[in-house]
Image (tube, rainbow over all chains, first blue to last red; front, side):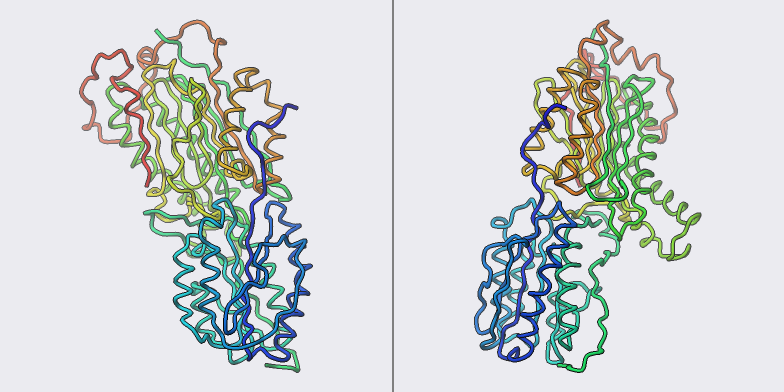
Length: 232
Length: 322
């Protein structure tokens, strides 16, 4: 066999960004369960990555309360990803967090050669800043418009209208997590289904055709059971 | 008088790493003569659970293109190229898309899935979604069409690699135009390249699904692949690389994760040493089918006596993008 001609080969990155609400309303059991659920989901994300060897799964985390800040600023390969607990403190500045994401979805720093990024938003309340400006900033980036978005609403106080607008797809719904068990299931689903969706081709494309066919929604959230005693 | 090119061809497809079904399809037919134009086609069914019949969609696309491409090649005549160019740009793309969608619908009607025979047409088309790249090489003319991702790569006599159908900006994140889009013909890119001097025509024409290009870390890496492929073909011809290509594609599929298909035509130098007929002679002896357009639009003004086959020059080369 002769050598393969051409340049180096490489798999393509999937940038996965957790956007976690760490406002005061998360205090107590919610934040504890969120930390637990994400830690427990890491092995499943690693398994998904092993099943998709063509995708290089890279994780980052932003927390938002009175300010938005990076919990993991540099992309971490899923096999090297470890979870440090987050703690609640303040208001719900989602807009600031969305601006942080938008900055990372510019090209550069995002490469053009990549699979779709995943943005996973988890929140239990209503934003206290101009979150729509942050959403517009994401929509203004090419990768932001393409991103696979998932949203998890924790408890009855979560503003589902905000999460629905974040999803920007009338066929998708936020996933309700009204109990510790549901939150664990929702995090597990977001961690895995969204990554699979990001690495699958989609018929669509830009141009003057008559628009894409009705989009498939392979990452539509599951319906979670409510057989939990402890309901938020 | 110039010898018509002698084309040697190769078509290989490998299943994506870890996949159970190859949803690509490809085919090559013909020799490149006026009587027997060379037609190449590859198609990439979208795969995944959202497109469960896309392997069939890819096959339908290739079968249709090969049939239409051969009909198109038989229409090539001096004095008709202007009308033929319009046909290639506007009518043939629409015909291909409409025929593919009809073929899919008929297949669904015969073998409906769980959604039932009366499922919405738009939803049914999506199940079979596929891209398509096709090319026709005939004496004096090279024309190609592309819908969606993948690459059509050409190597010229000076070794230059070009991608005449490359979009001005590639889609991000594995989104692609598709035959399942209702008016997909508006998204088809068309490259029209008269070849008045056969000795200056393309040396290599390669069609590949995106599983190949996306395996490289950069666009330059893919261009280098094509240049290296051509060098090896120039040294050893198709028989000299036929066993290597499947291994190369398997390696590519491990990085792209996708089915990977390559269909190529390489102009073999020196093997057909006796000067053949130039295109005018070739066309003069080929049977002439009736054109699929209103005959009132034929003929065009007689071409200028420039020494080229029909009065066109390489300056007429152009690519039509949506």
